[in-house]
Amino acid sequence: MEQLEAKLKKLEKRNYRSYTSIKGEYDFTDFTLYIDNVQSDPYAPPTRIRAKRAWSLTHLQWLQETSLDYQRAARDFLARHFSELLEKDATLSIALSGQTVLDHTSVIFDDEGIELRYNINLPAEGREILAKKAINILTFHMPKYVRRTLLARELPIEELKEHCKVIVDQVALRRQLSEHGLVAFVANGSILPRIAGNNDRPMKDAIAFQSPESLEVELMTPNRGPIKGMGIPKGITLIVGGGFHGKSTLLNALERSIYDHIPGDGREYIVTEESTTKIQAEDGRCVHNLNLSNYINHLPMGKDTTCFSTQDASGSTSQAAWLQESLEAQAKALLIDEDTSATNFMIRDERMQALVNNGAEPITPLVDRIGQLRDEMGVSTILVMGGSGDYLDVADTVIQMHDYQAVDVTSKAKEVVASHPTTRVREGSDNLLPTETRQLNRSSLQAILQEGKFRIQAKNKDSLRFGREYIDITAISQLQSSAQVHAIGWMWFQLSQTPGWESNPVEFIAQQLHDNWYEMMPKHGDLAKPRVIEVMATLNRMRVAEFK
Image (cartoon, rainbow, N blue to C red):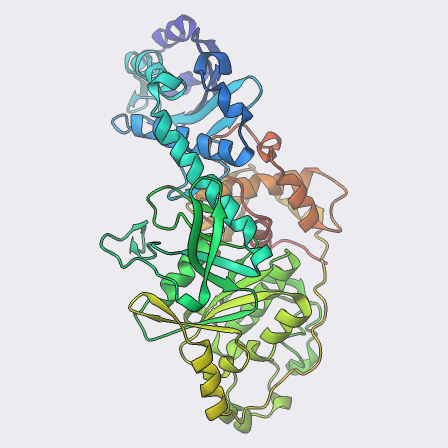
């Protein structure tokens, strides 16, 4: 610490770039400070810092004996606690993941100890260094924050334990879904509505969820014991109801519950099968050598759809592509909202069939394939539908949302089907072709690295910069944090550098995402583990990627 202080004293009023001289490792007696990447300009991304304390000095060694999920939750708690200590210090920050608990690199446990990874905006006046202020932050305030986070007696231990128990219970619930034939579970008492579209916290005075008796199941948790709630069975589930009654709110809760939530979020005991993916129409996106023939055939001019590519997909083509890409990435359940779907991909009613015959229509709508996805591929679908009753013919379960409460109307839906039979003709009667695994040309990623200054940069959750390429990922709504986007970029970097995986990129990415996935990453605190599905979904949107 004295060495760092001495270095900083020499930098008073010097050019900001001189800060780079403090890069290195410093002994603070009870923890070690690492200054890894130093910003060269006050307006550049902040300086990256790590502080590591030996287990014996934290008195938190008991955490080493807990499960990996318990440790993930404990790391999340420590990051949030550290962030609370920094609230009055705008120069220091640590990456968090909102209401979800991700496998994040802001706090790392290893054999030696606990490591905090965080950032500092080194102080300046214009572009002149304010060394005295930097010394005050780095050698007085910051050590206090580190010690109050990495010392058991300074922590609210019971609160930490409760935080971890809630996460472990969610993991236990999610693991029980398959054995109970479920794709999702919504506990009684859950709070589904959020404050606003840009605020993911629970709405105050919201109506608590209560399962209809016919769909109520009881699952066990290791800490809270038995929990009752609505089980959504595997197969085809329709969520219906009038506008503003909570259909999309329920679907949004399900799409977010592939991840765990913090205590007090209201969705702590809502869990969804972890490979579930939400798909929608996405006009203008690219598609790379994808077999769309299950849904799109005999295009004008004889264009082949078994190996289809475009840089400007229509709504129906983009949604068909997303479905096929999700199956390629091993998705076992799909979430679809009618409001964000392409109408002609979802349904072609009897009147339109009478006007435009099958031979002139290249699209086989999802309503005629959704049963085959269930029966031939074992893929479940949860679909918000308010405009077409034709899906009632294939639905296994029908849930009506009324005043934010769920009502099981499956029996009533069957009566409606019987009393109002459709004259619509089913299209696409042939079996589904199996999903093919495409190969990725590694040289297409290497070419990007060789052109100009290499950079990986996440802009919120909406965009990823990889070298000179900017990838729009706004539509991938299940990404929870820019830290996941950042990690995806670094995984691509690993793909570009590692030979031998090209024939099956999905399998290689899955191998990368093992328990200690961050060991292959740079020592950044703003990385969070994504799913294989999101890594591939982002890669599929890179316009210069080459699949074959």
